[in-house]
Image 1 (cartoon, rainbow, N blue to C red):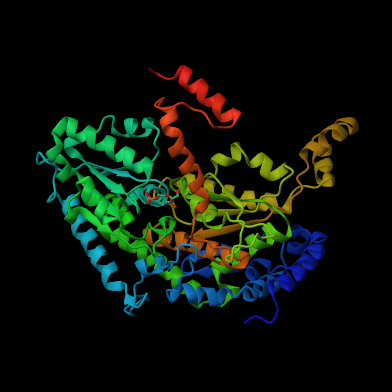
Image 2: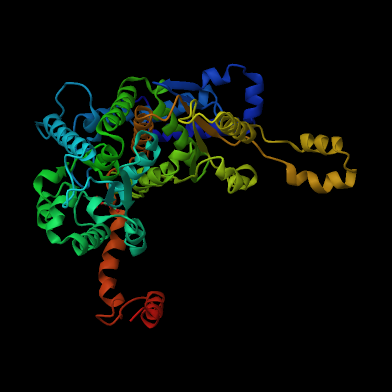
Length: 547
Ligand code: F6P
């Protein structure tokens, strides 16, 4: 156990902040030629450069003290040992078992879960090989060309993000599509142009009761039956769920139903059978590589000292900015077009996990918890929102992600991409002083008056923090490691903030109210009993909806 508590650790950090306020990073870099070496670490082929942060050795030491004071190591062991760390749902948190590559038993509630995990993986392999090889075909004997995954949240974001990221490993004859939104436009536009005889649906829902998914599943069924008859459902639907009773009721045959377990949270389920559309799209062997990459990051997280542990380093830096410097958002900016859904995926992983305001024991927290996570790929973002990142009034800590090797051989592109990402982190760190701007404008021949008017607009405050994650190539293994890296980062932050990172009660109220409002929106019952805003909006809708 740690020698002093969270409170003392935060008090120490506040002092370090005061000192570092007078030492911008550009000065620290000038004074210390070893800064990159000092503040970079590696896990497998992933290099984390965290030298462009507002830190020094004392501040980092205090951050690791905080992690120890919060007993990150103890909580990590508790998670691995299957303790019910998801206290409000009384569940273990065992997504690491889904990608475990060793041969030790992993007991949860007294039972080794690994035989069950391996059985489902074997079933996934047999099914995906058969679909891809043409042994499993549609009702009319046609080979499948399109897989439509219907799910939402964790039953959509992970597989959709990974399928796009690994698209070079897919093949043109079998495309995966993702339908999540209850907005009919989503399923309409996805099915438009697809051939029912060649389309397979995967209904992915941990609970098999989520309204959006069930509504889309019913529409998919109607679309298929309308063309091939209801008997075709048997051949064109598969399901992934923990609720096998409900999948049976829907009419999905048991040999096309893939189970998982309540110890897998929705946002941590991409490693389970929820990954089925990934395996269908890129092949089971690549799905296995994704699992292997995640397991490699697990080994790193479980064995490396905190000071060299990538998820821990990223977590404590996030806490540093959130709680000590008061920065409220965190941007993830992949210079990797195929990671364009990565930030959306991380939004659920991070914000659903740590967007909490009570402690594990239900007391109100009096510190800030999870940041707002957002991002888009570079270089596109540079021509959109980077203006604010460079010169706006908010400081936004960032993660840049970039591969050393692209998937394509298009020579000028990747060097330019790399030049841009390096330039951005350098510019954010260095900034540009009024003296530098003045000198630049003078060299351009501007008059004194012109310089006075222009210079303030061209000043960059600098000292803006960023991490850079450099990896060799966006392979399935590396992607698995990257996802697991962020999962563990979020876990460590949840431990430090003393919240339950594994429940999501915050999504319930909206669901309940939508259920209650539906008959009123449908015009089946009168819409009374709401606040005047809801009442007014409802009135507008009823007056204007299609009759
Ligand atoms: O919106 C909350 C949530 O429960 C997420 O946590 C989950 O990933 C998503 O809904 C979908 O749930 P299910 O897989 O049960 O359909």
